[in-house]
Length: 206
Image 1 (cartoon, rainbow, N blue to C red):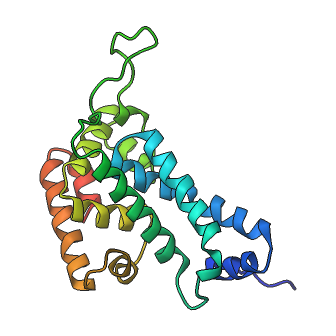
Image 2 (image 1 turned 90 degrees about the vertical axis):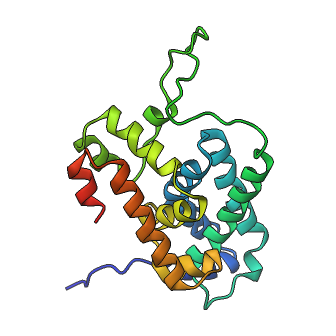
């Protein structure tokens, strides 16, 4: 009787890629590109910039594959790269106004009646958002996440979208694990306050 199939770890795939197996890299991309995009999009608020971050992050994985240490966590390495790319983008845009998540984008005729960025966004919380009230709650959630302080927002996104453990987030952000946990707690408290009228979703954050 055949036993249950064990999923190959990210680290094992990186070892295979370092040895010349291109399909291992393709598998890593498929495994992480969606959560990485969602993380970058929620940080930057612009789809094209998030796509650029994802592409650049995987390009850097290719360029620096030989430097990856087998005892390291691949997700720690990948999200450290993506986080730094997001920080670079935010610095470049610091003096420019960026589209709000609830600002209507121009329609095909340029009249500003197109869907908002919030309406176009889909991430790991999509099902929860739908259950909590459709478009309006999605916009409120997106706006509440966008309004979080930078350090709290990135911890929240790494935890909720990428499902990274606190220890790994601490390594990525370069702060103690207890600080990461505090930032997550404060982020959840802020989101609960912002979304208190939507009790079902607020309870899901606890």
